Image 1: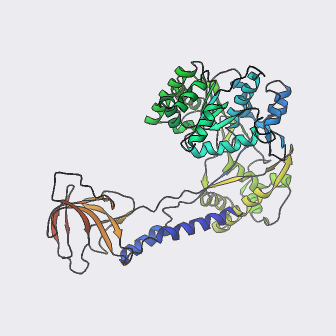
Image 2: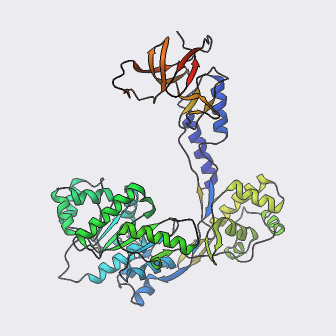
Length: 532
């Protein structure tokens, strides 16, 4: 699939869909909305960013041989594993192995790495390893040993599938080495009772459900709470989402979990970027401080684990002349991986859209739009901007197709992400003035910029004829208004229940018979005309 063509198709479909609800009759409104959509206000230019290459570490089998992991981990954690395929040995990234080693010291830690860095394995491997080490025939009793908290049910659902591939594939039903279950608002009553009767080793939930589980006087919840006595691990996934009042609620919940289950609980947090200011050491200090506040226990700065990246291309940043020559190459046919690694455009793309150097190490480059990247290329090479944009797209697709088989796995030269943000079309606002003179706006401001005497009112349209109306609260009669205020379309409850003269309705300005009437609103005075 060509992701650039798919993006264009998606935007075209959304534009057509969002404009299909309303067909304004007024020419000035039609012209304004055409201009807004033409500026792509609701879908800014997409950002492009390379998926970085992580510094590799030992395989699961090597960690087993070195007695870091339990021997069963070699069968559990395998790449490409399925019921009919045992998969191949899984090689960890450096930051994943660092997390495993910190976890074995029974210390709390935070993994702060980017998207696609395998954060979930950085806590599931230590958890599963510890459960396997403690399991002994005859004395093993089912209980909850780890609780993983996700900010959204969708994340918990995806992890159910991920864990199933590792902990269920290749094992007979009922003979799984480590058990797990999802316990959210989507869990049925029958499933909840089944979980309580046979508690899993790992419980996947969200903080609201964990709060309910600990406070509801439901026998199923009470049974599960008893099963969590002696809890060893508490994981907060997407740590950066817990801020403000919600962050305070979660921090208090973690303290209640400690008090109820285990004061020496080992807490683990994962997050994308949590701090952007200062040096890497200063950012890690901020992360450690936030995590300590949430966990209710100290997290040393040394236990903040970041990703370690590496280059895949070979050579120095090319000159403008070499880039120009590289852009003129044919990108329609596949090429050898090693040859493409040394291509001038490969080097420029990786060091421009993939990596940047900070404090002597490689970190992720800031995302850029394709237009911005193409402008840079055009400036360096003297080539046409449109040509550079097209060639950059073609090259990214070629680099994505180019693969190398290594360590029983295939890796692409460049896997890249296209970030497309799409916002709802929202509302249209207007001043109470005749067509062609009124000020139109889609940003939801209160007044026309630079003139606080002109209040902006929300516009709605008839779906049959396209006539525009203003939903309002009005005081007085239609010919003698004493107050006027904008209202939401579906809002029909009076703010002032004691004011019997305050009524909701729709205001339509008469385009043909404009006879000004002076009205004072709560915020300003204005002139308007009503159709009688």
